[in-house]
Image (cartoon, rainbow, N blue to C red; front, side, top):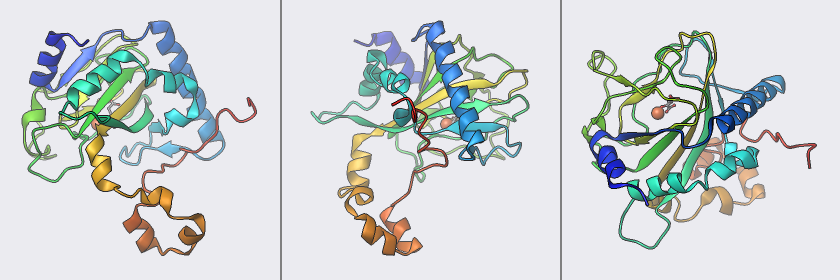
Length: 262
Ligand SMILES: O=C(O)CCC(=O)C(=O)O
Ligand SMILES: [Fe+2]
């Protein structure tokens, strides 16, 4: 059961840092695993370099769910599910949320600050409820200088997106914390990864969720599954885009890190 104080803080701030949700030794192991995977994806030429970082110093490893039991087991942690059940609460017996994406965000020394953004891709005005939520897992300490996530407390209540020119001087706060801690964010919260001015890579997991009705509305029929391969092979790019076939498949997502271990 989530404590009332946690719920209250999240409702007010749009953010909550859960200190040491996993042991630091576990965070170390996961960090090593992520860095090995990133190296491997580079080596085989199927890597994802974050295109919005002009320095090319941010690498993502996508589809962690498929890549190791180590990551799948995180998805079953009670506190994570309790948090999401709280954030997406509504009166239904259906599953309240689905995994949206599970990726590692590896920020190398010299990477600049990310663009201030919210994670929910909604047109304005932004509704007051959460269609998305994120959990940012600190696999090393997030410090003042290594790219800790920055956020504007309470900004999940603003009904617009941040404006890159007008919103330069905001009192952003740093989500610093010890490794093993998890930063929970409302999908409408204004935030960004900080610049990494340290000498080490900053590794975080981004495990994000969406309200289950979003999927239900967007895929009353799941086009990505029900269109046969032979029909897919004949489809124009335009029709593939309309059906959403291939949408959400990132570079490197299907790399099999367990190949040879089976
Ligand atoms: O890694 C971080 O600190 C945040 C990254 C982020 O907000 C995003 O990519 O949406
Ligand atoms: Fe984000």
